Length: 263
Image (cartoon, rainbow, N blue to C red; front, side, top):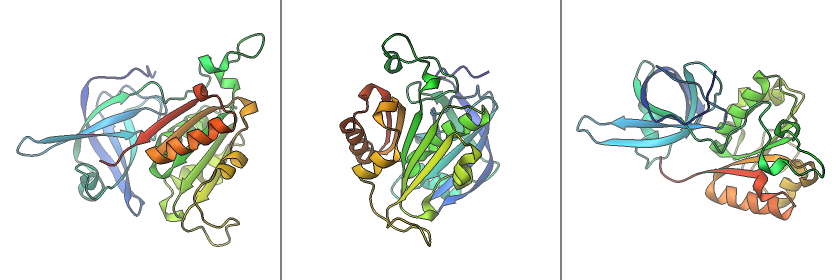
């Protein structure tokens, strides 16, 4: 059972798998002693401590969800960062990490979730949140918590209509391509990829930055009253959120998660 509550305890995890995810990112699977499980969309803190006692802590979205002791991360390296270069370049299978979490209760999705405040007005009764379509929008590594939602969606054989709009520089920069291939194997899931710098051979769309028109043509219309989960850089999130509101989406139905410039 997964409680979903944020946990204040620090735990020790053992790296059981680590391999390249993109040219600048690494996928890391950690077995965490006492991990209570997590809800899709939550995150955790990783703390590194140097021999002289100096420590640095950074937050990372979790790409896995549900019960069990293992958590799946994908860490993108920032050359000037304090934590991500070590995790991407130096961490080895068998290494121990201090883990704090799971954390967060706002940017989360669960199959058959309870009704939420933005879903309730339909002119005569409440509509369960699970009856509303879910629109995921990610930029770059911002897709990581959205992957957890897709995995949760697939694992539960959930019938909620799901769409993912994913903006990424090149095919080599796609995170969790194995999960996103063939729309996750779910007829209720649609994946739309937007390449901004280089597209695969034969791709029907010229690479370009995501636009308001692309968003309008790719996401569930506002009339479907979707729940929207939007994650990426601050500029990406603020720009796309503004477009969604302009297109008639209820701001209360748009949940956002941003990542900054230090890691």
